Picture 1 (tube, rainbow, N blue to C red):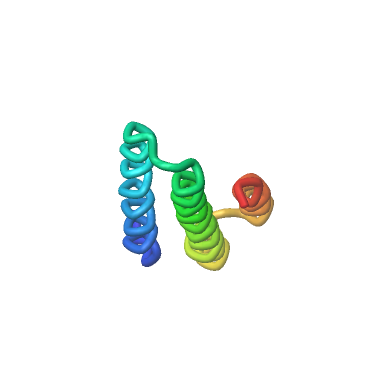
Picture 2 (tube, rainbow, N blue to C red; picture 1 turned 120 degrees about the vertical axis):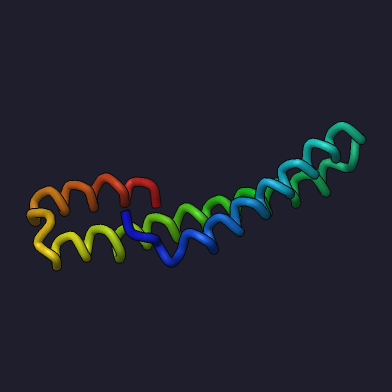
Length: 89
């Protein structure tokens, strides 16, 4: 399987979200203000959404486009997979 150029950035985003999520649990345990917790939850949510978008876009650009161009897949299967993955956007 070929390497995706976007995966290191996606991993970085998810690790950042993981760190934020861990701090949110601590904030809850320490009974920090709900406003502060909500702000951190939003940061985690955005990081995950952005990672997901980057992954889906990379899959479309890298996997689907190259598979059709290189003749590894027929157009019908590629369109079906495109429809399936865009549901996650």
